[in-house]
Image (tube, rainbow, N blue to C red; front, top):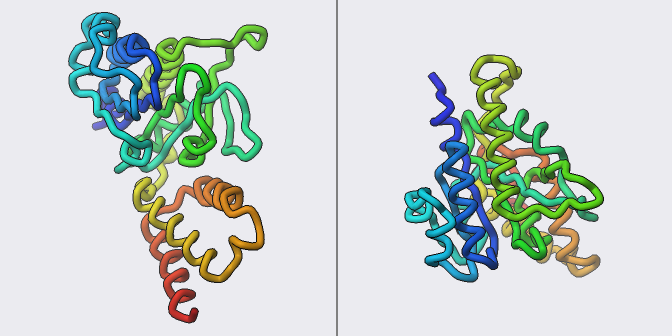
Length: 245
C-alpha cells in the first residue's frame, strides 16, 4: 500500500545556480518540514557553508545528503518527469499552470515515475536552457503587483501544496488515473542528440535556426511523455534513415 512518506520520496528538489548559501539552508528546512528529503544542487555559488547549516535549523541531514552536481543534466539522471517553477510564461513554453493544479496532476505520475521539482537562480529564475528540460511549467499565484518570493519561500509553498494533495490522493479524493512509466531524462536526451544528428546530416538544421528548432522539438516530444518502447521506435526510424544516407 502506498504511503505519504513513500510517495514524497519520489520527488527530488533541484536548485540551480543558487547564489546565497542561506537560501540553500532555508530550502533544506522547508523540505524537511513538509516531509521531503531529496535535495540536489546544480553548481551552487557557495556550498558547503556555515550560513547554510545555520539556516537549515535542524535539517542538517538534508544538507548532509544533498547531491551537488556541475550540470542540470547530471541532476536529472534517472528522472522521468520534470516540473519547472517560473513566474512568467515564456515565448516557447510548455503547459504553464497554477501549483495547486500541478500538485493534483503530478501525484498519479509519481506513483511510477521519478519527479523533479526545478527551481532557478534567485535573481533570474530558470534560464531557457534549463526550461527546455521540463515537461511542464508551474507558478505560484502571488500578488501581481508584488510577486517576488524568496527561493526558500517558493520551495516551501510548492512542497506544502504537494503534501496537502497527497492526503486527498491517498484517501481516493483525487481520481487515480496512473500513467505508464515514462522514459528517463538521460534516455530522452540521447534521443534528442540522435534526432539533432540526423537533422544535421540531411541538411535540415542549416536551413533554419537550429537551436530554436531543437527547442521546439523538445517541447513537442516532452508534451508526449514518451515511454521506452516509443523512444525505441523513434530511434529505430532515425537509425534506418542514417543507413539510407
